[in-house]
Length: 67
Image 1: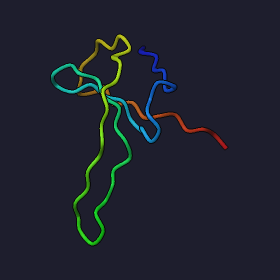
Image 2 (image 1 turned 120 degrees about the horizontal axis):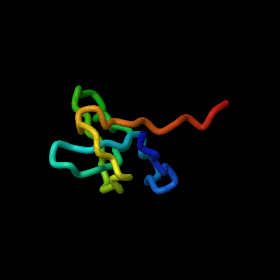
Image 3 (image 1 turned 135 degrees about the horizontal axis):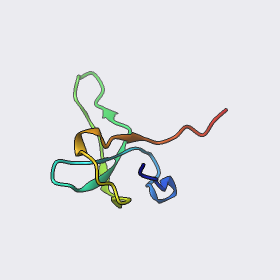
């Protein structure tokens, strides 16, 4: 099981994932453009944390801070 160091994530990063090219990224909460159905999400390069699995199941959500 891969251990993720969320302390390395940029502020606002909500997910970590590997893409089809094997590159890891932090993904931020999407921004929705007002009065449209258009949205986008920023991404930033991330360490791979030694992930060796299938990229299609690599999505990992940031743990909640708790109550």
